[in-house]
Image 1: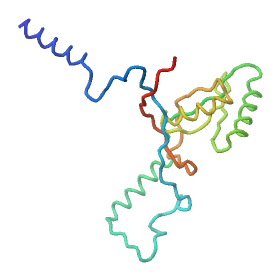
Image 2: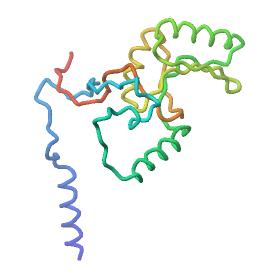
Image 3: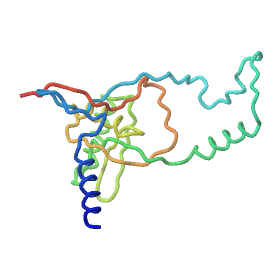
Image 4: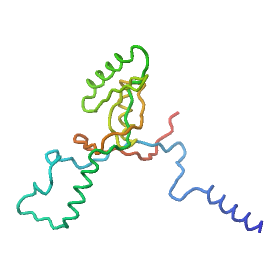
Amino acid sequence: MRKIILLIALTAATTLLSPRTGAQLPPAGYEYADSVIFIPVAQVDSSLKGKDIFAVLPDNVTVVQSGAIRSLVETRTRTNDGKMQSGFRVRIFFDNSQSARGASSAALYRFKLKYPAIPAYRSFTSPYFKVTVGDYRNKSEALAALSEIRKDFPTAFIVRERFKYPMMDDVAAFKLDTVRVLKPISK
C-alpha cells in the first residue's frame, strides 16, 4: 500500500514540476512581460441611444421573432437600468488634513482641465476628502488610464468601486486587454 501511495505522489510531483505544454521558457537573453494592447471595436451609434430599435427600422425590413423575446429584452433593460456594478476607478486625491477640502477642489479642477472626457467625482467619507476618476469595467482599462494620469498625479492609484450599470462609451473606438510579449532583458 505504501508503494502505491509513494508511486502516486511521485507521479503527481513529476507532473506538477514538469513544464506545461504550451508554456515555453524564453530564449536566452529574453523574458516574457505583460503588455497592454488596444483592440478596435465597433463604434456605438449614439443616434439610437435610448430608442426602440424596432421603431426606427425601415419599412421594408421585417423582423420575425417571438414577442416573448422582445418582452424579455425590454424587461432585462428596465431592471438593469438602475443597478450598480462593481468596477474600477483611479483615485487621484485622498487626504484628511485641514486644507483637504480646498485641495480636493483644486485637484478636481486641475483634472477636469487636463482630461475633460473622463468623469471625475469628489466625495467626503469622514474624515477623508477623495477625488476619484473614470468608470472602468475591468482592471486593464483602469491600468491604462492610471499610466496616463500618473504623469500629472503621481500618487494616483486604482480602487474598486460600484457605479451605475450600464456605462456606454460613446467615445472610445477600442478596448484594452493584456497580452504576454517576449522582450530582451535590459541590463
